[in-house]
Image (cartoon, rainbow, N blue to C red; front, side, top):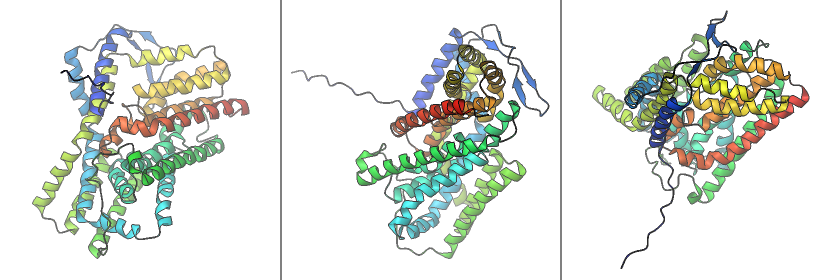
Length: 462
């Protein structure tokens, strides 16, 4: 007797498989999308910008199947700084967690009143959002994702809440920026606006978006705490991040380790602001921090080397995801299709009324962030094109900057070529599980972006 066929439910592909599918799709696109290029010039400040009227079609440059695999390797090379930041960042956290210092500190915090524990989520979100909004924080968060996941789980929430408290918060702040030098600073400079002008309106925007994000995380977290089966990652194993609350004393040695952790974070922030430190210097601080924690915990040299290898092995999934996402950009650049996409989208916006142009810019920037997932890179690539378009339609340049800011920032948490894929790789959360939480929230955020742009047009934001 034959058994009836059961209908197989759709399963969202893993981040690695999804990225490989996109690599194949983009490779095929290099045969279909016409190749094109803008001319680039260097302005007085040394910034490379596009000559808006210089676009021309070029000889087709399709990427062969063999070159596609070469591009995958090149993606790992191009993403090396981020990859090693992730690896050394996790070595630092791994070294701290195995000492039991973090476990003891969190256990001490958990013994406090429940009301104090509830404050942890909104306070964390506010602090990270301010960091992203003011001085453009983003990269330091990678090494701290495991800590926030551990805290969230210890408080009775899930890994998604942990990621949302740090990575999600800093991303919302980065998008709803007030004085972010990497986005607002560069875009206003190219647009010939006074640096950080129009800040009052952006402060209102920041307050609204951070409030919405807090509410979304708190509502989701409360639902998960009441019923763990409501979690987007229910049934998944996050034991490597889990901390058990114990009554053990918080020893002097553990206090030194946690003080060293705080010092490392302060050093990174200070070095970034004062000395222009970037990913390589951050990786060095993480490496030093891991060794310091191990020495204080009386680990031998061979043990420390073993910890380095063990921690790297746990983060290889995140490293693979980072390399594959960079490969997509390598293929698009090799196939000369990025500038064609920019030119086509900009052409579609011509002739629209001012408010519709603002909305079209938002959609354009959000789509473009798939192809150019870099705030400063996107500013230098697109603002020279958007500014003349804004002038032609009577749209203020300040609104053009706002549309760029929104489109570049919020979609970072959406596109698999942007930062979300790295964050989820570190957090060991499948991209589909993240989308289960994030997509409804993104819908609300997108409507708010549209509202603030239209409002900016009607109030004459300039």
